[in-house]
Amino acid sequence: MDIMLIIALVFTVLVLALVIKGLMIVQQSEAVVIERLGSYQKTLSPGINWIIPFVDKPRSIKVRRYQAIDGENVAIVQEETRIDRRETVLDFPGQSVITADNVSVTVNGALYFQVIDPERAVYQTENLIQAIEILAKTSLRSEVGKMELDKLFESRQEINDKLQLVMDEAGNKWGVKVTRVEIQDILIPAEVEDAMRKQMAAERERRALVLQANGEREAAIARAEGEKRSNILVAEGEKEAAILMAEGQRQAIDQVLAAGSDRLDPQMVVGYLLGLEYLKTLPEIGKEGDRIFLPYEASSVLGAVGSIEALLKGKAQ
Image (cartoon, rainbow, N blue to C red; front, side):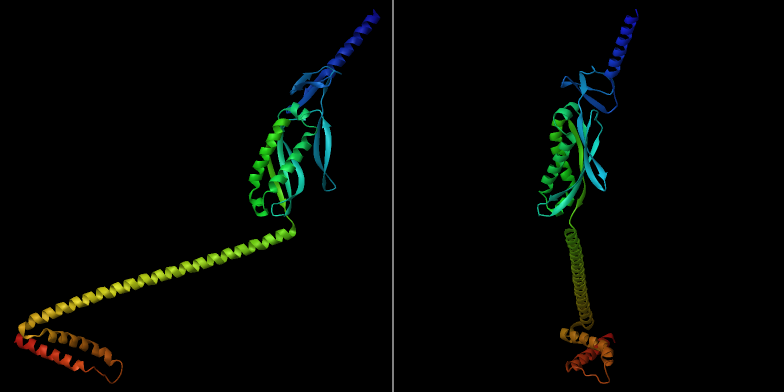
């Protein structure tokens, strides 16, 4: 009876040990790939799972991470049985890349990825993180090598989009989804940076000179247009004044002829009007000096003025 009890207790202990050994708790956002006798059996989901002890075993996955040691990023490879399915960032160190115009630059990038299919992540590549990193580096060299240095700084988003397409194509095979790729820093040699700084200063100075020249040209055009408009207005004013003066003189001649009836010669009337103009300008001429010199024709004109005045007064009487 004691022997049966002992056997029962031993059996119970073994069963409990097997049950405890077979229980596996998987955390949220984790997955475990299980192999049975060396072949893939299933992928454990978050929660409580049970496996056959000593028959089912978790398949480990290699994870490569960088750790700062003495100021340098050192790659450390670890084997883990639990696969993290959260979005992970891979900040790989800067690497030297040669652009299309033969300038050596150092590019530092970051890659965000998420394990979608743990089975493929374990079986399709020997070291998932290393494969992703190397593919990202080679793709980055390829894209940067097609661009010149000046265009490189403007095309970060274009490079990111192309890298993501390449990574997505490979990631589908590895069970990984690359969410985004970002270029963090682009470091250029000091002499190239100094040359670019001088080039930008010269370009700014050139733009300033061009703007100044354009401003002066537009100001000159505006002044010329103003003078042109002013001259046109002056000419139109003089034209209208001349027309009005001629019209006034014509009306004056008509009035004088009408007052003198048929006894007045039109030429004498014209002389009369000219004489009046001479009389109007005499005060202005007198301001120039003590002596006044008049043309010979002025005496005849003034005589015509006297004659016509006498005729008009005689007619009035």
